[in-house]
Image (cartoon, rainbow, N blue to C red; front, side):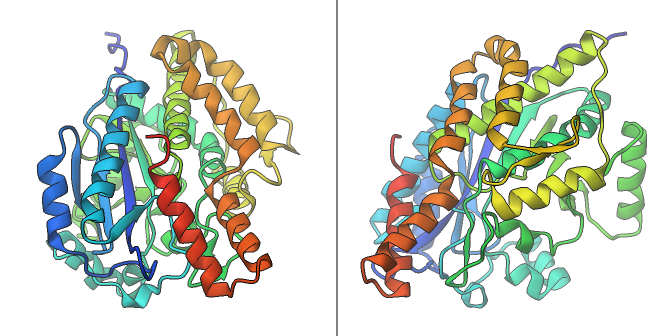
Length: 379
């Protein structure tokens, strides 16, 4: 019996850092009223704490279209902005803060987070990072596993288009996504493992749970994973996009590629699955260069410009985007390679401030001011 077609619904989670509008530093213990008011006033979706108290997380509801997801994310960003402003605080959509000190942060009072801190020690305390998670509704277990295997080759591209973490502890790291170098210190991170079938995947999870290595599969933190809470594939590799339209473009790209892979299966066409070793080379290039120096085209075995690879993918999946009603948002992903990512704008803002005679810390303040503005721009 053939499994029914997936719904390809969307759910998006975003994490923001809360910063003091005067000092521009993160607020390591913001008023609990911010979270309470946001949770109470959220018309759609949800607002909650994250691992560190200086973070705030938003989640959309299950959305039928990309346009619906954009509307909900815009409302949630505005809500976090409006409520926190009452306390002279602002959310910034970036994966790292330009100069905040990780050792000054405080953990959120939740049992799961207490467990993480006991287990991971300093590694957990360094997690002053934020990301974007895109859930796509794929209800059949075997299909989710098959698409997980096939999608891995596209993960570095999504990272390259989302980079927003060039600074760490007041230093320009030379990387476009320093966030992943921090997160990769956690176990069970990085590119997802390749599995023969869903039973093989379940067996691996059972081994870890029976040995009490993990409580449940939510403690698997791959760049893309089979969600343990929802009937979805959860893409987790992307940095936080400062511009909302960039985040929505990446959601449309993710959804369209998954629909394309499903269509190839339905049409009995083979989709290559590349080794984790080769895909990992592109993951590193995305961390280091973002969209600037190209990625390894695994078919031609040559480095090609990110825009060329993206243009080819957009062309291949455009029919799928039309079916999903997100062709406009899909095409907007091409604009990212032209105007650059948040990482580019942060570095440019910093360098311009320094060239104007600002001290390094003042230049970093200018970066924070830009992030505050861009986070709620064009909502």
